[in-house]
Image (cartoon, rainbow, N blue to C red; front, side, top):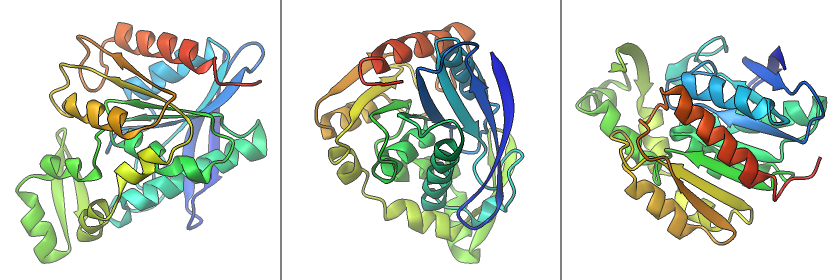
Length: 253
């Protein structure tokens, strides 16, 4: 397999950094992978699943959202809407290079982002969410008591997974304005919902809401025993195997 550096422009001209995982042989499909909230393109789930998919013929672009990892910009200036814009820019980059993505894959809040972005990428035929919240406001519980400080001062530093991030009030306002139910109901694409019953960060009830809101064709796969971040290599491999088999029904080379 071939792992290449990818750099492309975001909606405001900022430089976004990515990695393009290419199969050793023929490319059967192209995909964009959206990472979880405050994670990055090199998170365990993003890197392992992308590599496993590349081994099965799927070229995958994983990238850092604005203000994270190696991408330019200030995270404090980002919102859920700007993340969706970044996703569309990633899809445009693939279209201009090796071919538009036929699959969008999103982990956690990245899953919510691919659901919101799908209608802006006409070539997409299949969407996969992994441990995704049904409502973008679900993120508020991670911010916790810092919400009041953010609303009062406009921005505040919040510890997430032991790391400091500056969260703005614009972000809080933006996640409250999203209509995920409408996005899901209007997908008009095949949907695969993957979620662990033991997910203690985004409860499995979110998967039920996403699944129930979507029209067919839709599928649900239980990631029994997995944690939210898919830190066990076997779980990431399983996700990639099932995902590739499921998506093959909807893809053209």
